Length: 470
Image (cartoon, rainbow, N blue to C red; front, side):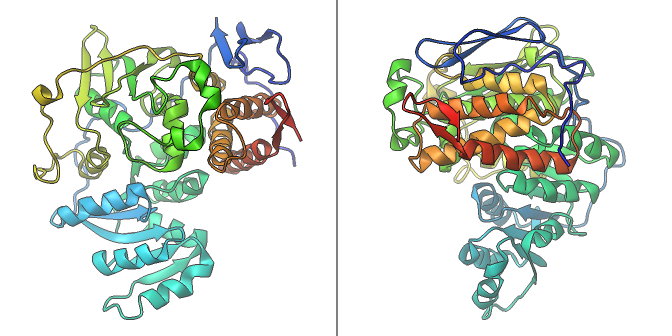
């Protein structure tokens, strides 16, 4: 059965340029789009409205009376334990054994590292998503004194996410693969330390009502949203006026826009501030990471898209800011270190003392200066694409994210050029406007995630370096 839905009456239109045409395109809602002469898409928004979703937790970040407590170290599960988020989470557990303990771990295919984690942290339950590697994991644990229960495949990952003893689940799996486990954890009443962007970017219309129904807290584990979360605590209802997301600008922040057509994969992977995986490092270069964070901030905090701004901050010391109704601006500062926001999602509402040896304290005098500048929409067309997808809502934001993920994969594998990332995402979103679902089910969200990846992968490049349908 085809999954189709007409545009919701409140949406007002979808602002995506048909990449196969170079003329000005006017869409419903007063949205105009035109391709610049240098081939970079540009969007001019004149009017657009959409329903504002109810904010997920943290909202105003109020600690409710009678909050559940537990005896001893806080029990946690980690979904994606061998990835960047998972390994940093386990570093925090290792440094704070009196504060946290691991009850369940799930990984994809890095059996060697998973086995080492099991021996160190002794979880009750372990899952390996790649079912063919279960025997290899058992062999790696053959000489271990402690042997956990092992459940293979996606069902195992779900069981880790909803382990009965876990209070908080750290969701570190990349992509929509992390959506089902996160939903399972919410339905089981677990608080979510959110590091999986797709949970809200793709799943927001479905996940937010579910989180509210089960009275679950969604605590952001990435640096920008953690900064916002920390800044709004204690604010009264209605006090938030504007969200200011800071961006490093990535590898090409100082490169003239006309030079972008010449850049290679190795160039995009040279992030000036952060040591991250390939995908997120490329996203930082394109600024798609910030566009996706705009969508996530909209869902997390209920802010209108007109009230969410991006500013380039090369030092990556201010992780984001909020403006209150009386024009005060509150900021959260710290060295570029993902462990701090991860730690705070795990410890909230407490603050845990950290050693100065492993957690260097911020020295503003040593730092010297902080600078800011407005982002260039021509250099970063990802921003217009992301805001447009966000205003369209429904399945469009998940399609944007999935298409970008596939395009970045193709770029890293040197199948397309750097500028083709924007073109492929633009074309995929433009095609999806035919089947936009404004209030999708979980199945529809996953369906269009897979559709977007396939569509993006099948977008071939003509001699003019413009995506065309295969």
